[in-house]
Length: 390
Image 1 (cartoon, rainbow, N blue to C red):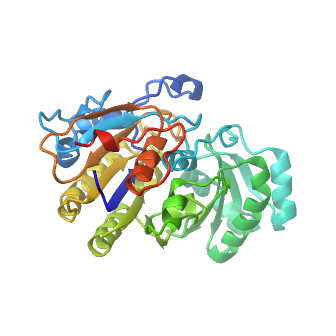
Image 2 (image 1 turned 90 degrees about the horizontal axis):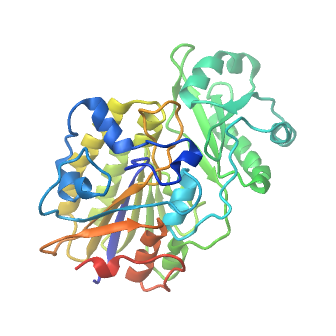
């Protein structure tokens, strides 16, 4: 198949069932999609995703099984022994992290906390694992009184720094994050995340100025190879931050899923070649991590309504890929990501019949397919699915 333009949309955290090694991560029984539907007590109103074959993906029981899907469908396992955003996205672009990023599920070690004080000149509050909204509510007042930023982590490879905008302005918070990123490279921490918040005690809210400072792995992703060959790569949402701004020709930062989809439609309408790569983080940030299954369901239904106008903009030389980067089952105890398969839905105009893509052994099959489409060398350890698209 000859495609000139590819659109990838990552439904951040939409897992479709526990991976075989999920028990090693404490995630046996996780199934973000099906468990959300179970909480709702009825099938989700996502007819467009169903029409692409989501209900035909192995292990999915909560979505309608259509007889003649409009898209190709399958699922992917993550080869990297992790379940975080950076690892998932890097693997999609052909980089399998071995060993994976370091995590501190029991809390940040004293050595790192001492370095934080030394390198930034700030003290800190907390330093353990926590939900972001909960820790801001619990320690926000003490932070405002002491001027010390709140540090916290999770089961993922993250070093999060929260501060009220009136106490530590956002630009200053970014500076603290950059200094932290510099010394955390040696510890292989995947992301340093700025978490500015505002409001009064009892009504704190995180602002839209979150910023991720990702570890630069130095490995060359397929995004870099295709962009260096002259292909335009547009990153929408936090894509630029995730890939350390490497291999991205244009970046569009967004405030919400709605903003992300509106930006995607705008770019698709204006840019007729290249790669358009969107991450929709609300699924994970607002609903998965906050154990809000009903909110997650509503967000999925809202995304489903964006699909028809997007698909109408696609021509015969356009390919749409919808997937996820990990799970975050909101029905489980705790607020961490879950080790799950992710869906793989592929659509383009033309085929009279579509079929299964099976269970892919690595997210890197997406990168291999991009390399295939844009004329790059095949990726080692990954398999393009381009030949399966009749």
